[in-house]
Image (cartoon, rainbow, N blue to C red; front, side, top):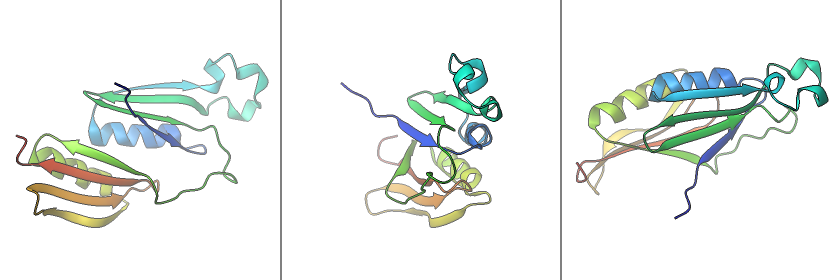
Length: 138
């Protein structure tokens, strides 16, 4: 079956954001700059340290990102959220607290009628996160 991965777009702060997400969520982060790629000769020198492609992997999570858009064309919206389904109450609380640092908790973690601990936030990079721990699944 096909799998959907989340791809985030930044304008110059992809490395910073993905390193932040790795600190919050754990996992293995790989980064490729434009200067390390075959595109290096065709791109402006000022972009050589920009991230062409980043991948953060942990268990079933794959988060992809890039710096390949300029500030004028980068639009942050609220139509996409990253849904993080956690395996324990400690994990959901820890991830929520870390991701909310310098961000905006939009929905505090709370017990829901469907038996989950659920909350939402906008992180310091303007990305929307939904965090979920299904107490009935574990």
